[in-house]
Length: 213
Image (tube, rainbow, N blue to C red; front, side, top):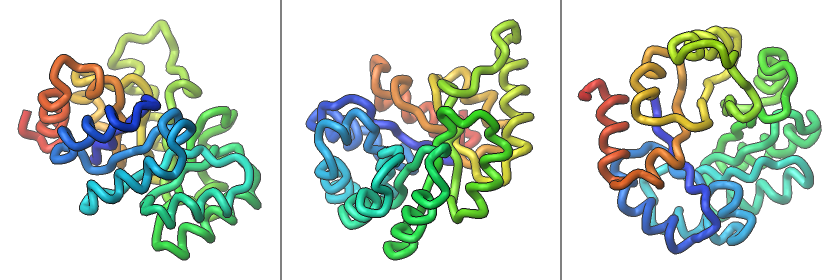
C-alpha cells in the first residue's frame, strides 16, 4: 500500500519545505487543490525539480477544459492528474489521451459521484487508472464504531474495479486498520502536516505500511 502526501495549504514555500522533510517516507507527493489554485502549475514544476525520484500528483480535479489543463500539468512534470469522477465521459477521455502522450496516469475523485461502484466501472472503461474514494463524499454510517466503518469501506472497495486510494482524515491509529484492506494507497495531509513532528508522523506511517511498526 502506497502513502501519498497531500500538500493542502496555499503556501508554496511551507509546502516545499514540508515535502523536503518527509519525502523519504512517502511514495507520492501531491500538489493539493488549494496550492494549485494559488500557485498554478508552478507548484508542480517546483515539486518535480526537487523530487525527481517521486511521482508527483496534480490534484486539479478537472471538470472543464480537460485536455489543455492536463497538458499543462503533465508538461510541468506531473505523473498523475486528477479529474472529478462526475465529469463528462468526453472530458475524461481527453484527459486520458493527454496522460498517454506523457506516459502519465489519471486518477478520478469520487466527490459528488452518487453511485461510486457503477461509475468506477465506467471510468475504467474510459481509461482511468485509479480512483480516490474521498470520505467527504462517502460517509460511513455514524452509528458504527471504527471497526464497523472500516468494514463498510472494505465492502465498497471490494466492488470497485479500479485501484483505490482512500482520502479523508486518515491518522496513524486508523492506518493500522486500513492496512488490512485491499487499498492501492492512502492519501494523508493533516495527520502529517499538522503533527507536532511531521517527520516522526511520516516515519511512523511508513513503518505501519511496511509492517515494521
